[in-house]
Image (tube, rainbow over all chains, first blue to last red):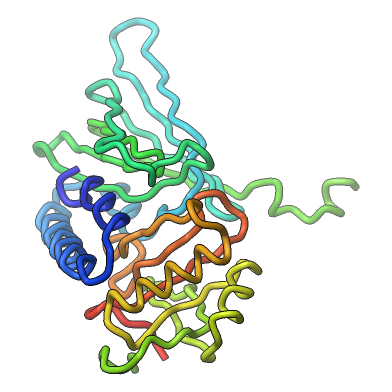
Length: 170
Length: 112
Protein backbone atom coordinates (compact mmCIF):
# COMPACT_ATOMS: atom_id res chain seq x y z
CA UNK A 1 0.00 0.00 0.00
CA UNK A 2 1.32 3.39 -0.93
CA UNK A 3 0.03 5.62 1.85
CA UNK A 4 -1.22 3.32 4.60
CA UNK A 5 2.00 1.58 5.45
CA UNK A 6 1.68 -1.66 7.47
CA UNK A 7 5.32 -1.16 8.38
CA UNK A 8 4.57 2.26 9.89
CA UNK A 9 1.60 0.83 11.78
CA UNK A 10 3.87 -1.83 13.27
CA UNK A 11 6.42 0.81 14.26
CA UNK A 12 3.71 2.95 15.88
CA UNK A 13 2.51 -0.03 17.91
CA UNK A 14 6.04 -0.66 19.14
CA UNK A 15 6.97 2.95 19.85
CA UNK A 16 7.83 4.10 23.34
CA UNK A 17 7.24 7.56 24.79
CA UNK A 18 8.17 10.54 22.63
CA UNK A 19 9.29 8.28 19.79
CA UNK A 20 5.60 7.98 18.89
CA UNK A 21 5.31 11.69 18.07
CA UNK A 22 7.54 11.51 14.99
CA UNK A 23 5.76 8.39 13.78
CA UNK A 24 2.36 10.06 14.12
CA UNK A 25 3.71 13.05 12.17
CA UNK A 26 4.65 10.61 9.41
CA UNK A 27 1.24 8.93 9.56
CA UNK A 28 -0.54 12.30 9.33
CA UNK A 29 1.62 13.31 6.35
CA UNK A 30 0.72 10.05 4.61
CA UNK A 31 -2.98 10.63 5.27
CA UNK A 32 -2.72 14.13 3.77
CA UNK A 33 -0.95 12.74 0.73
CA UNK A 34 -3.63 10.05 0.35
CA UNK A 35 -6.41 12.63 0.51
CA UNK A 36 -4.66 14.75 -2.11
CA UNK A 37 -4.23 11.73 -4.38
CA UNK A 38 -7.90 10.79 -4.01
CA UNK A 39 -8.99 14.35 -4.83
CA UNK A 40 -6.82 14.21 -7.94
CA UNK A 41 -8.29 10.95 -9.27
CA UNK A 42 -11.88 11.24 -8.01
CA UNK A 43 -13.36 12.61 -11.24
CA UNK A 44 -12.01 9.61 -13.16
CA UNK A 45 -13.38 6.95 -10.81
CA UNK A 46 -16.69 5.10 -11.34
CA UNK A 47 -19.55 6.85 -9.50
CA UNK A 48 -20.23 3.79 -7.34
CA UNK A 49 -16.63 3.68 -6.23
CA UNK A 50 -16.77 7.35 -5.28
CA UNK A 51 -20.03 6.73 -3.42
CA UNK A 52 -18.40 3.85 -1.55
CA UNK A 53 -15.33 5.88 -0.66
CA UNK A 54 -17.35 8.81 0.58
CA UNK A 55 -20.18 7.14 2.44
CA UNK A 56 -18.78 4.00 4.06
CA UNK A 57 -16.02 3.61 6.61
CA UNK A 58 -15.30 -0.08 7.02
CA UNK A 59 -12.62 0.33 9.65
CA UNK A 60 -13.29 -2.34 12.33
CA UNK A 61 -15.79 -4.20 10.12
CA UNK A 62 -15.67 -7.97 10.56
CA UNK A 63 -14.02 -9.65 7.59
CA UNK A 64 -16.28 -12.43 6.30
CA UNK A 65 -14.28 -13.37 3.26
CA UNK A 66 -13.48 -13.02 -0.41
CA UNK A 67 -15.19 -15.16 -3.03
CA UNK A 68 -14.09 -15.29 -6.63
CA UNK A 69 -16.42 -16.65 -9.29
CA UNK A 70 -14.37 -17.78 -12.26
CA UNK A 71 -15.76 -17.61 -15.72
CA UNK A 72 -16.90 -21.06 -16.90
CA UNK A 73 -16.39 -20.48 -20.59
CA UNK A 74 -13.15 -18.56 -20.44
CA UNK A 75 -14.69 -15.68 -22.39
CA UNK A 76 -15.63 -13.60 -19.41
CA UNK A 77 -13.56 -12.18 -16.59
CA UNK A 78 -13.74 -13.27 -12.98
CA UNK A 79 -15.96 -11.55 -10.45
CA UNK A 80 -14.84 -11.03 -6.86
CA UNK A 81 -17.18 -10.44 -3.93
CA UNK A 82 -16.09 -9.31 -0.48
CA UNK A 83 -18.45 -9.55 2.48
CA UNK A 84 -17.98 -7.71 5.75
CA UNK A 85 -20.25 -7.31 8.76
CA UNK A 86 -20.62 -3.92 10.39
CA UNK A 87 -22.98 -3.80 13.36
CA UNK A 88 -26.30 -5.07 11.97
CA UNK A 89 -25.38 -4.77 8.31
CA UNK A 90 -23.70 -7.00 5.79
CA UNK A 91 -21.80 -5.00 3.19
CA UNK A 92 -20.98 -6.67 -0.12
CA UNK A 93 -18.39 -5.25 -2.50
CA UNK A 94 -18.39 -6.62 -6.05
CA UNK A 95 -15.56 -6.20 -8.53
CA UNK A 96 -15.31 -7.12 -12.21
CA UNK A 97 -11.69 -8.20 -12.21
CA UNK A 98 -8.94 -7.65 -14.71
CA UNK A 99 -6.40 -9.67 -12.72
CA UNK A 100 -6.56 -12.42 -10.14
CA UNK A 101 -6.80 -11.10 -6.56
CA UNK A 102 -3.39 -10.95 -4.96
CA UNK A 103 -2.64 -11.47 -1.28
CA UNK A 104 0.59 -10.33 0.36
CA UNK A 105 1.95 -10.09 3.89
CA UNK A 106 2.00 -10.00 6.73
CA UNK A 107 4.95 -7.73 6.13
CA UNK A 108 6.68 -7.05 8.39
CA UNK A 109 5.93 -9.95 10.71
CA UNK A 110 4.72 -8.60 14.05
CA UNK A 111 2.94 -9.60 17.22
CA UNK A 112 0.23 -7.04 16.41
CA UNK A 113 -1.19 -9.14 13.59
CA UNK A 114 -3.75 -11.72 14.66
CA UNK A 115 -5.80 -14.34 12.84
CA UNK A 116 -8.48 -14.11 15.56
CA UNK A 117 -11.51 -11.96 14.75
CA UNK A 118 -10.02 -10.56 11.56
CA UNK A 119 -11.21 -7.03 10.85
CA UNK A 120 -10.81 -4.47 8.06
CA UNK A 121 -8.21 -1.87 9.07
CA UNK A 122 -7.43 0.49 6.19
CA UNK A 123 -7.89 0.65 2.44
CA UNK A 124 -6.69 2.59 -0.57
CA UNK A 125 -8.33 3.16 -3.93
CA UNK A 126 -6.08 3.73 -6.92
CA UNK A 127 -6.25 4.53 -10.62
CA UNK A 128 -4.04 2.73 -13.13
CA UNK A 129 -5.62 4.25 -16.24
CA UNK A 130 -9.03 5.55 -17.33
CA UNK A 131 -10.60 2.10 -17.22
CA UNK A 132 -8.53 0.27 -14.63
CA UNK A 133 -8.79 0.76 -10.88
CA UNK A 134 -7.23 -0.80 -7.81
CA UNK A 135 -8.43 -1.41 -4.27
CA UNK A 136 -5.99 -2.49 -1.59
CA UNK A 137 -7.24 -3.58 1.81
CA UNK A 138 -5.14 -4.12 4.95
CA UNK A 139 -6.64 -6.60 7.41
CA UNK A 140 -5.84 -7.08 11.08
CA UNK A 141 -3.98 -10.30 10.31
CA UNK A 142 -1.45 -8.17 8.47
CA UNK A 143 -2.44 -9.40 5.03
CA UNK A 144 -3.03 -7.00 2.15
CA UNK A 145 -5.50 -7.84 -0.61
CA UNK A 146 -4.99 -6.13 -3.97
CA UNK A 147 -7.79 -6.10 -6.53
CA UNK A 148 -7.45 -4.76 -10.08
CA UNK A 149 -10.82 -4.19 -11.71
CA UNK A 150 -12.82 -2.22 -14.26
CA UNK A 151 -16.26 -2.13 -12.62
CA UNK A 152 -17.41 -1.91 -9.03
CA UNK A 153 -20.63 -2.10 -7.08
CA UNK A 154 -21.60 -2.44 -3.45
CA UNK A 155 -24.69 -3.08 -1.37
CA UNK A 156 -25.66 -2.81 2.27
CA UNK A 157 -28.23 -5.19 3.70
CA UNK A 158 -29.55 -5.78 7.18
CA UNK A 159 -28.91 -9.07 8.96
CA UNK A 160 -31.54 -11.21 10.67
CA UNK A 161 -30.45 -9.71 13.99
CA UNK A 162 -32.15 -6.53 12.78
CA UNK A 163 -35.50 -8.28 12.79
CA UNK A 164 -37.43 -8.34 16.08
CA UNK A 165 -37.44 -11.78 17.70
CA UNK A 166 -41.24 -11.73 17.78
CA UNK A 167 -41.39 -11.47 14.00
CA UNK A 168 -39.12 -14.49 13.56
CA UNK A 169 -41.18 -16.75 15.83
CA UNK A 170 -44.57 -15.68 14.44
CA UNK B 1 -15.25 24.16 20.16
CA UNK B 2 -12.27 21.89 20.50
CA UNK B 3 -10.37 21.03 23.63
CA UNK B 4 -7.41 23.21 24.67
CA UNK B 5 -3.96 22.72 23.21
CA UNK B 6 -1.63 20.26 24.89
CA UNK B 7 -0.55 22.42 27.79
CA UNK B 8 -1.63 20.44 30.79
CA UNK B 9 -1.61 16.97 32.21
CA UNK B 10 -3.60 14.26 30.52
CA UNK B 11 -7.28 14.14 31.47
CA UNK B 12 -9.47 11.07 31.03
CA UNK B 13 -13.04 11.60 29.85
CA UNK B 14 -15.99 9.45 28.94
CA UNK B 15 -16.48 9.69 25.19
CA UNK B 16 -18.79 9.07 22.28
CA UNK B 17 -17.53 8.36 18.80
CA UNK B 18 -20.79 8.57 16.88
CA UNK B 19 -20.04 11.77 14.95
CA UNK B 20 -20.29 11.46 11.15
CA UNK B 21 -16.97 13.19 10.55
CA UNK B 22 -15.12 10.75 12.78
CA UNK B 23 -15.00 13.18 15.67
CA UNK B 24 -14.97 11.97 19.26
CA UNK B 25 -17.17 13.82 21.73
CA UNK B 26 -15.54 14.52 25.07
CA UNK B 27 -17.82 13.75 28.01
CA UNK B 28 -17.45 14.02 31.78
CA UNK B 29 -14.01 13.70 33.35
CA UNK B 30 -13.44 10.36 35.03
CA UNK B 31 -10.76 8.64 37.10
CA UNK B 32 -8.48 5.91 35.85
CA UNK B 33 -10.56 3.30 37.65
CA UNK B 34 -13.81 4.67 36.22
CA UNK B 35 -12.27 4.67 32.75
CA UNK B 36 -11.27 1.02 33.07
CA UNK B 37 -14.80 0.16 34.20
CA UNK B 38 -16.29 2.07 31.28
CA UNK B 39 -14.03 0.23 28.86
CA UNK B 40 -14.90 -3.15 30.38
CA UNK B 41 -18.54 -2.22 29.85
CA UNK B 42 -17.86 -1.56 26.17
CA UNK B 43 -17.99 2.24 26.38
CA UNK B 44 -15.56 4.68 24.75
CA UNK B 45 -13.16 6.89 26.68
CA UNK B 46 -10.72 9.55 25.48
CA UNK B 47 -7.49 10.91 26.95
CA UNK B 48 -7.13 14.65 26.33
CA UNK B 49 -5.00 17.72 26.99
CA UNK B 50 -1.58 16.14 27.54
CA UNK B 51 1.23 15.80 25.08
CA UNK B 52 0.72 13.13 22.46
CA UNK B 53 3.01 10.60 24.12
CA UNK B 54 1.49 11.24 27.56
CA UNK B 55 -2.06 10.80 26.25
CA UNK B 56 -1.00 7.72 24.34
CA UNK B 57 0.77 6.09 27.28
CA UNK B 58 -2.24 6.63 29.52
CA UNK B 59 -4.65 5.37 26.85
CA UNK B 60 -2.60 2.20 26.50
CA UNK B 61 -2.57 1.74 30.28
CA UNK B 62 -6.38 2.01 30.40
CA UNK B 63 -6.95 -0.39 27.52
CA UNK B 64 -4.48 -2.99 28.81
CA UNK B 65 -6.07 -2.84 32.26
CA UNK B 66 -9.51 -3.28 30.72
CA UNK B 67 -8.86 -6.05 28.19
CA UNK B 68 -5.49 -7.53 29.10
CA UNK B 69 -1.85 -6.99 28.18
CA UNK B 70 -1.16 -8.56 24.81
CA UNK B 71 -4.77 -8.15 23.68
CA UNK B 72 -4.42 -4.54 22.56
CA UNK B 73 -3.83 -2.99 19.15
CA UNK B 74 -3.13 0.66 18.44
CA UNK B 75 -4.93 2.10 15.42
CA UNK B 76 -3.64 5.33 13.93
CA UNK B 77 -6.43 7.72 12.96
CA UNK B 78 -8.18 6.71 9.75
CA UNK B 79 -9.04 10.25 8.73
CA UNK B 80 -9.66 9.44 5.07
CA UNK B 81 -12.54 7.10 5.75
CA UNK B 82 -13.85 7.82 9.25
CA UNK B 83 -13.53 11.57 8.77
CA UNK B 84 -11.05 14.38 9.25
CA UNK B 85 -11.56 14.54 13.00
CA UNK B 86 -10.98 10.86 13.78
CA UNK B 87 -8.63 10.12 16.68
CA UNK B 88 -6.07 7.37 17.11
CA UNK B 89 -7.09 4.75 19.62
CA UNK B 90 -6.42 1.45 21.34
CA UNK B 91 -8.87 -1.40 21.12
CA UNK B 92 -8.88 -5.12 21.94
CA UNK B 93 -7.67 -7.62 19.38
CA UNK B 94 -10.30 -10.07 20.61
CA UNK B 95 -13.66 -8.55 21.45
CA UNK B 96 -15.71 -8.13 23.60
CA UNK B 97 -15.74 -5.52 24.94
CA UNK B 98 -16.79 -3.10 22.23
CA UNK B 99 -15.45 0.42 22.22
CA UNK B 100 -12.14 2.19 22.11
CA UNK B 101 -9.71 4.20 24.20
CA UNK B 102 -9.06 7.29 22.07
CA UNK B 103 -6.29 9.81 22.62
CA UNK B 104 -5.62 13.30 21.36
CA UNK B 105 -2.59 14.19 19.29
CA UNK B 106 -1.09 17.60 18.59
CA UNK B 107 -3.45 18.14 15.66
CA UNK B 108 -6.40 15.84 16.35
CA UNK B 109 -8.65 16.85 19.24
CA UNK B 110 -11.83 15.60 20.84
CA UNK B 111 -14.89 17.87 20.67
CA UNK B 112 -16.40 19.39 23.79
